[in-house]
Image (tube, rainbow, N blue to C red):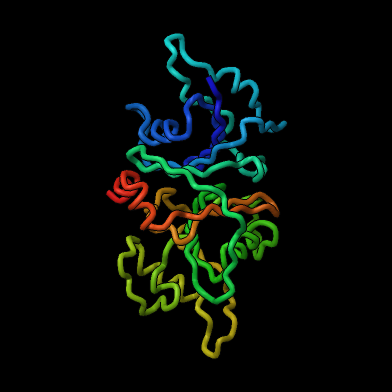
Length: 261
C-alpha cells in the first residue's frame, strides 16, 4: 500500500499515511471519537523527499496496514519546526478540508502576484505562528518583512499565511460598510487599520503592520479567502490561488455547502 507524506498546517506536523489526500482529509477533520474535530489544511509532500532533520524512513517503515488490511491512518514524523526544514519544491497540492470532512485540492500558481496600488490587508498567519495582522504591505512585502528583510526584531525562517477579505474596510477602515464580514472583532479591526492609513497629504504611513490578535484561532471561513494562500521558506515563496466562489458552487457544491454551514 502506498505511503503518502503530508504537511499539516492545523496543527503544524509532518505525517506519513496510507490514506490518499481526500480520505486523509476526512480522517484528519472528523477523526475518531476522542479527537477534536474541525477544518484542516495540509500539503501533499513529494514521497521521495528526505532530510537529515526528519527520520522519514523509520516512519515509512511503520506506516503499514493492519493485519485485516485497514490502512494506517497516520504516523507522526515531527510536530515542531517542520516548515523551516521543508523546501518549497517538495510541496505538492494544497488541500482544504471542511469540518465535515469534504476536501478539495489547490494547484500551485505559476507566479506569486504583486500588488502595485495602495490598499490595506488582513493576514492570518498559520505556521509557525498563529497571529492575525493587518498591513499596508502586499502579500510578498508582508512575507519579506518577517522573513528575509525583517522590519522589526521579529523574524521567521519561513511562513504560511492566508489573506482574508476586508471588503470596504480595505479602502475606508473608518466608515466602510461591514457588509457580510463575519468577524466578531470589527471595532478592534477598524482601530488597527486606522493606524495604517496614510496621513493627510498622501504621506507614507509610519507603520506597516499592526497586530490584531497575537494568538488567533487557526480556523477561518474559507469564503473569506481573498486571493489565495502563501507559503515560503527563506527566499522561496509559492502561491496557491483559491477557486472563485462561482467555481466552488458549480463544481464543488458539496464542499462549498459544508464550508458555509
